[in-house]
Length: 497
Ligand code: BES
Ligand code: ZN
Ligand code: ZN
Image (cartoon, rainbow, N blue to C red; front, side, top):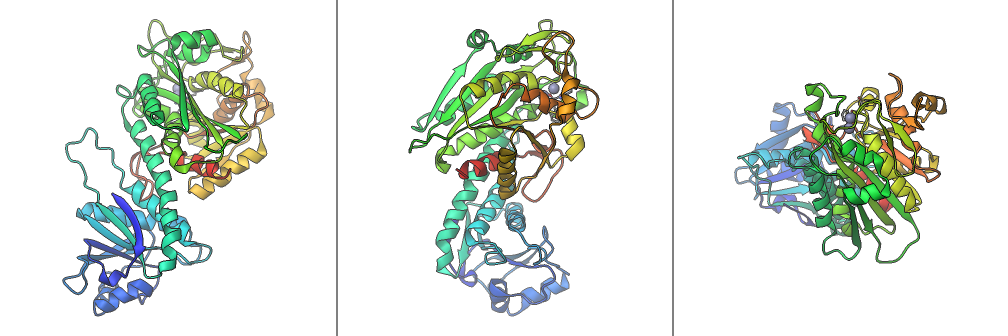
């Protein structure tokens, strides 16, 4: 599907579905919607009144045109209330139009640019939100399905005002980058554990880097990890028949820069819990446990198109967490790459063991900032629910930057405290630290555990356990399944340099 922007008049557009809009509570269509109503001899407003269409966000009204216009059908999408209108409404309204187009099997869609000029909203911002909404809504994981849904070939955004075309073209490019990156991550997360094992993540990273002058990759196999002392990654991998790897991707901008950030992702391709086995219900979606690395890979998949002005390092330790006669036992002690010893009391708290190594490795790259992303704790889902990530860190400024990036990207995140007084909860009797705290505040003790491996480097940890995978539909562009959560936040953060 191509998303295009051009000058055009909706009353003259030939297409399968013509999309206009209206705010909630508006009785008489205005602007482009008014022009369409006029061309239809007032039928549009009469029918929508008869249908009691309110213009509420998430709803829409459709009618067949029958020759009065070149378009075959008109869809009016609700934008919600004018007061408090944001780009999120634009994203959702555009997604509704896409969902309708897919349901109808429409090949060509022409839409007005929703919302531009309302309050602070710019043509660029609105076009970006539309591209995000449309591209994210069109996503479907149909690898194992006979019936493949057909998405439209063209989605054209038109405006009678030629001056908005250029900023809107740039906005569509901004939106496409984020949505394509997120959809890339969704495919990786949706792919089941038997196919998405550590080696596949390595191959995915190699594919991304291949043929791109700005990208490089280093891959460490078991032998190399042993030499490096990556006891966390190796320990978790012991129970699996799939060998572990550590991947390090490097993006260097065309114009050299001194600024450097490291993105570190949890990459447990399947988390059975290990010997501290999960109940089977909790295991059903544990292919999600590499979503942190999928977010890093998603961002890297579009990084040359974004071309940020900062050096970016993408790092993850790919493992599978399985029980076996060779698996790490509760009570075992591992030594991480930074030499700290860890008493493993619960083999299901495995993400932090792998991150102990990848964070230690990230620190050695001397970055100005480390952002880690991990489906780390069920406790974070208990605290913030399924739609909001937990944000923790050792540097207020960096946490603020990430929170701002998340707000700009339209992803929900909330800061949690790394309470110093809780540090003693992960003191071990026999090692430097243990891998579980008490029953309470599990996300915070996990965050405090990670902090032991970042030293003084500014660092922020995103616990994405809730929003990485939608157990039910969340909004018009987030269907059931992997969400690609945090990819757009990462890209927004990289844009800020
Ligand atoms: N991968 C899980 C966390 C998770 C839970 C991700 C729900 C996505 C959805 C993690 O490895 C885990 O099992 N954590 C344990 C930690 C506990 C043993 C201290 C948990 O949250 O129960
Ligand atoms: Zn686990
Ligand atoms: Zn896990």
